[in-house]
Structure formats: structure tokens, C-alpha cells
Image (cartoon, rainbow, N blue to C red; front, side, top):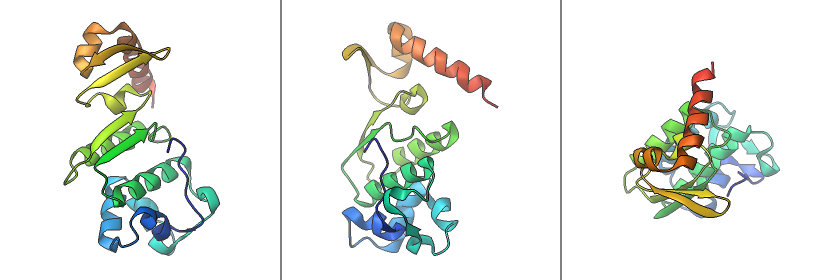
Length: 164
């Protein structure tokens, strides 16, 4: 989901939403890949910590990571991440993408993102402008052949350099 939604209950109940029989080891593996293990370990009660309706007692980035972990617990063949890392800092986003790529039995992943750093390692990138395809290819190829992609990349790269 583009908007990360947690349900009232516990972290464990939220993670098991799509796989009620998931073992605790599977939950922690999904949390580790989703970069959410420290979120859970920092809560009193850990997996049994209370989650308010909508996950209001978690930050936006924490909700995003927990909902990604929930998806991973299901062991999907296809994983669609629709702007799922928008509330994450660049370093956490990079660790998340790397962990998903290195997953055993890694799913096919579709990433919808406005951040070029989130998609630059993709096998194939499709660039849209005003609902039309403006380019398609790998990161380096698009930097060389797609003006729209290059402009987006350069504007974001400069922002990353300026960040403290």
C-alpha cells in the first residue's frame, strides 16, 4: 500500500496478518530485511507491543518498515513497493533494497518511486512523464539517453550532496 497502515493489536498480529502460522524466527527475519528489527526491540513487549489503530504510535518510517516486514512474512513471489520508502532516510532505504535483493528465494520486485537512488540498481527502469513513457532501460543507459531521467537524477543527487 502506498500509505503504510498498521492495525490495532500487537506487532505480532500485524506481521502475521497474511501468514497466521509464521514462526517467531520468520517474523524476525522479515523485520531484519525490512530494517525494522530495532523498532521492535526498542518497544516494551517487543512483538507483543501494542499498536494503536493506524499505527499512530509509530513514526511514518517505522510504519513503512513494519508494513514491508508484514508483506515479507507472506513470502511473496511478487513484491510491489509503491513509494514504500518515502519516509525513510537514504541510508535505510539503501539497506532495505540491498537486503531484499539478497533474500533467499528473492521475489520479483516492482518499485514505484520518485527517488532515483531507490531504483538505480533495478534491471529495468521505466520513466514516466505526464502519464507517458519517456524512457526505459538500466540506470546508466537512462542517464545517457533519457533527458527526463537525467534531470531528475541530477536534481536529487545535488540534494543528497548538500544534506548534512
